[in-house]
Length: 117
Image 1 (cartoon, rainbow, N blue to C red):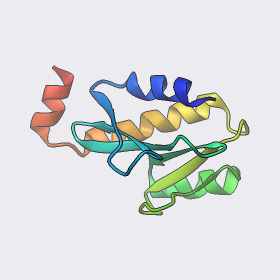
Image 2: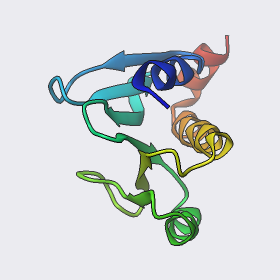
Image 3: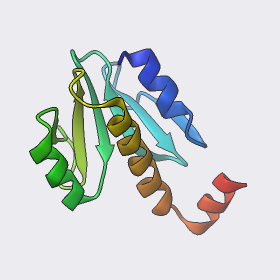
């Protein structure tokens, strides 16, 4: 998966925007001001940090060498996916959806309603 394809996938989520608050080497994808993904777009292979359920994250890390605790993030809640071709694209898409959903679930009710409307 290349950066362009990944960016398109991330921006299909309702209300998703991209920013570069940490400088030119990392692109952050947010919904209502809250981060749901971070891409190290200069990394080879691409590195995608996603939020997840801590218990599921442990299982995924045990099952896939390309999923590790996220660099510079809360390692209990965030995982880095090294997009080296070893992870099924369906799994990557599912984990993007889960990260987005977790962040939306944590938004204030008014923000969730504005996003839905």
